[in-house]
Length: 581
Ligand code: PEP
Ligand code: MG
Image 1 (cartoon, helix red, strand yellow):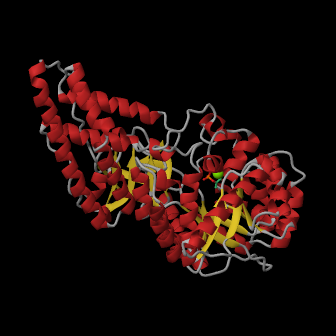
Image 2 (cartoon, rainbow, N blue to C red; image 1 turned 30 degrees about the vertical axis):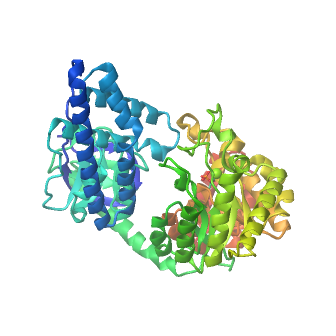
């Protein structure tokens, strides 16, 4: 075996792990060609299929229980989704239809149905949902094994601490895994939101996924290094590489420990300029991590998840129960709840949206809400009611013009009046804000600022719309430059307009969580930054090491530059030389 054999993948959980590989071999049941069956065998075949489905359902319920006992909330949601799929007409009825209409056996019919579902998933824009494709594969494999009377495969007993190498991991694997024995995860398949990635982050175990062929390159017992910082795996390292990585591992762990010092300290520059550091969340399960990393509140609570993976619309009570629990858990800190931003790259399953040529510019977010006013009102009522239990801020996405705010305010007023009539309490001082993520909103930021209590800059979309780059299109991702002089000028215009009107301005796009950009974000004058919880301590550390005055001077210098790369090299050079320290 070659020494120092290096493979590159996607880093999904930070850290360095060094240890012996444990290769999880999984054999797939082979279904050769389906066979035609005579009409009299059809009812029996349908029964056989139904029995396999029932057995799989029982297996899944048992696994979900095991996962819940282990406290893996998100994995248990994946099991819920699998249980939903197994009861879904798309899977069961379609397979029965194949058996009856094509007159083929149950295994062949199931294989056909799984292929159809697979194809449908490939066209989904949303990365999270697309990656659920592998969950369907695992589910299909389970049903197939039950159908053929084959045993389900389990991860064998792991004796020592190992690096787990697999094609992919399923929630079932996780349920059967003694995670205290796992030093790192490496897989052929998967992306940032695959099950392995989610688990690895929850367990804080280094992981690299999407390596494509790692299971072919590694045998159980081989020495493996997992670099979850840059997404590299090294098989059979030389003693020198091993030493190098043992050092890197120590340095990383020291840095992590050191970062926790910043948890209790305010995010304040050396010359006393205070910035609020908030977290972005999607799920209630993220709250412990948010608090553990010292967030001062939630700057962006994305609420789309409530509408995904289900057949009916969430009720007001469902919305309310979840918002109330988030508000109470974060109290006395504020929670900025953003009304739904469905459409575009955020797929919705139960509402029939028209097929759009350009979904990112289509009927998404606030446009959708102003059309489907009842759906909008349900969410507004729930948010207002939750505001009686703590500090809530209400935020609207994708505002492109003044008229939208007028419409929103009138709907909000109706909802408030109705709540008053029904004697339901809410915070009458509730602040409202808007996301600034469309260039037209930047241009008229002075007009919009008069109408709201705060702005939050959504750089993910603002960059997409201002530079004309589809944010999910990998072919143009090289053009996606947060430091583009145009982007920096847009941000600066928004901040000036907000401050002239006396309102606060936050940033909640990915750019806000990039610690390297802190001198720019501070220099431009943002009041608040909201980011994923794992970035908070690094950003705080950086804020505490720069000066506001010097950062403002720095902005004047970069305003003279023409390209993002010029700005980036200057930023790196100045950060090393004198901006920090
Ligand atoms: C943004 O666009 O920057 C943003 C924070 O919203 P989302 O990523 O949910 O579109
Ligand atoms: Mg956005």
